[in-house]
Image (cartoon, rainbow, N blue to C red; front, side):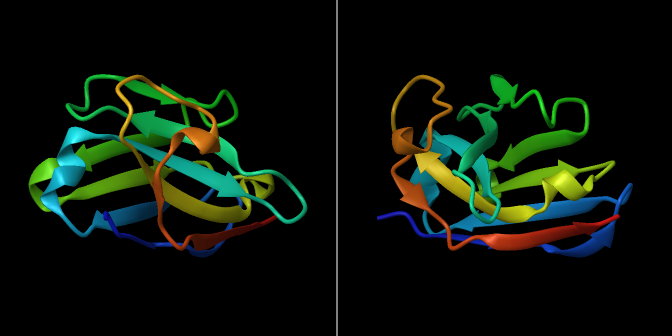
Length: 124
């Protein structure tokens, strides 16, 4: 079973940047889609970004497009989320997740393994 550990969250001011990282426990992660989701208090977990095994297929939620960049380094069993121009509405717990299916999925139910999450708080 893949274990995922996120890091890089924190408290920043609006307009700042943060880089989240997610480390997987085993190399088989390199075969799979990786996704980032977030969940704000009282809201459902929502899709942020996803990247396929090769890094050649990427998708973003409209709310983060042109501000966030997802990337992966299969040799290091890692995926990252570079977040620029942060807004207060980006405040949430951010989770990385692994999808063993073969096509893109934007619903949380489509992902099989999850990290514990890292808090991102953006002050105005």
